[in-house]
Image 1 (cartoon, rainbow, N blue to C red):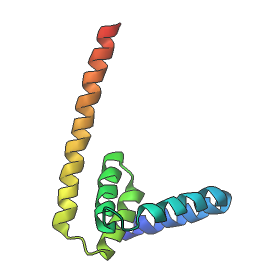
Image 2 (cartoon, rainbow, N blue to C red; image 1 turned 45 degrees about the vertical axis):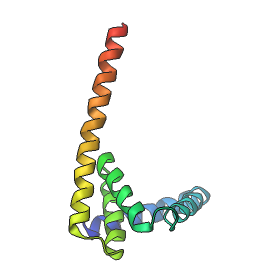
Image 3 (cartoon, rainbow, N blue to C red; image 1 turned 180 degrees about the vertical axis):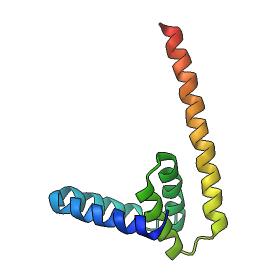
Length: 108
């Protein structure tokens, strides 16, 4: 997702923050604590977040984390590999849910 989408996401969130400042302040504090170095470095956390954003289909999130990963020096190969993990997980989720649906059907 491109920089225009990231900027649009920022503007939407800033606008929403004016309507709900306490909630967004709490979310921002959570984000700052989450995306700090710990057992995992920030780049690894951003790569994980990108994969989740891909599976969830959030254009704004994809752009947001792509921007962060660009600043952190991630390579195109790393982004592509995250994409393949997201593809596998998306299909894996569908496989698991399909198996649950069949099992649920049998319970009826």
